[in-house]
Length: 271
Ligand SMILES: [Mn+2]
Image 1: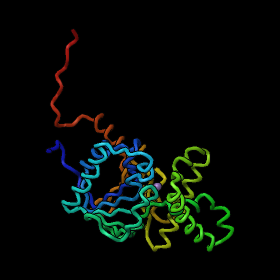
Image 2: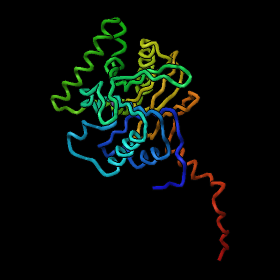
Image 3: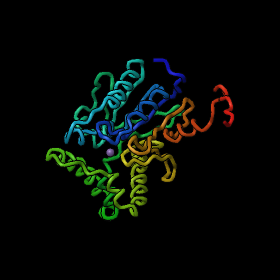
Image 4: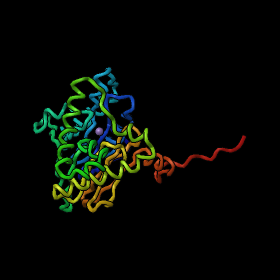
């Protein structure tokens, strides 16, 4: 179908935390965004399909299907699609390293930007346990940190096998508003440290539903946000610059500014 706009082409598009399969997913908005942006490479940075929610009751409206179809259509047209599963689509972690219908599945990726900078691309849930227990883990040292990462993975698998709902970081953070700020900053610092461990210039992650882009911890920290509340995405332009897109706000701003080519509205005379 012909649209009345031309899609913006970018080098890379990063999306995470779509939570398709839940009522919270803003699929219509996301579909609209995907119509406006085309990319050479798309990274899906986890929690794309919410397997935990789907298990407890099927919710899959047409709009969610449309999003999947739109992404696959881009793949058919030549976009490289890399899917890095998160904790809510952890069932896909069993398929890591293989390609499903042109979609590459990976645990994490190292993205090289146009300017040669390297970014670790990872969902981020791997660090939940460490984020929550940072204080005593720091006291126990390096071994405890590695052990916590290991335990985190197996704890989640065990919870899944037992049919328990996944512990959600974002809802936890919201319940304790006072702690949320500390929590976010601890998460950011940990992910920045992980980027350094990979000799990368930065990290691109999701998970905490809090879009951001800064250099507060010595390397670039980029968080893609989510499509449940904030409707955010990260794009890399052809010159290697990154942009945080807040789609809802961008759409509102566009509506507020009349287009130059728009026909003049005849002035209505008062009756
Ligand atoms: Mn997550």
